[in-house]
Amino acid sequence: MLTVLALEKPTRTFRCARVDYRPLGRSKSPLDGITSLGIVSLLRLQVPTLIMQSFSMKDLTLLLARILLSAIFIDGGYGKIINPDATIKSIAAHGVPFAGFFLVASIAFEIIGGLLILLGCKTRWGALALFLYLIPVTLIIHTRFSEAGQMTNFMKNLAIMGGFLAVMNSGAGNMSLDSLFASRKKV
Image (cartoon, rainbow, N blue to C red; front, side, top):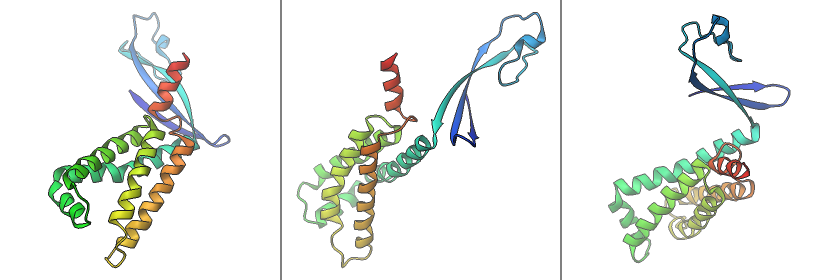
């Protein structure tokens, strides 16, 4: 599978060409193998069949936004998996009981929510879950403003929450599993 992107200037849309290779039968002429991509199959191997799908600039920016928003949560969840002791100590240091339970809950929220956002699958639900997850995390963990970096982390979490509100409003866009599932339901 080969993917080709080309920008069309007047419409500001990207055309994503997916090339599907199918075997060619015996042809009478070598020119029978010419496709819309201009590929000639002289050796009768495989000729691409072109399937076009248009993506707008909005779809590309929504994909980029989803990648950037999800990266911090997937990485954070992975960090909690490989070093759970540090997270338990941090949770307990902030006076939260049942630190082990909240460690497992935070890993689940960060990994599952991050993957939902990244893949664009149930995107609005993933954005809502991570938005709600960030409320207690921000208010409990990042309000000790006398500690270095806590004001920055507090403001960063507010900015991320704003990003999740935007994703909840706009959805995942056409470059997502949500869009793929919706198009299959129509057929």
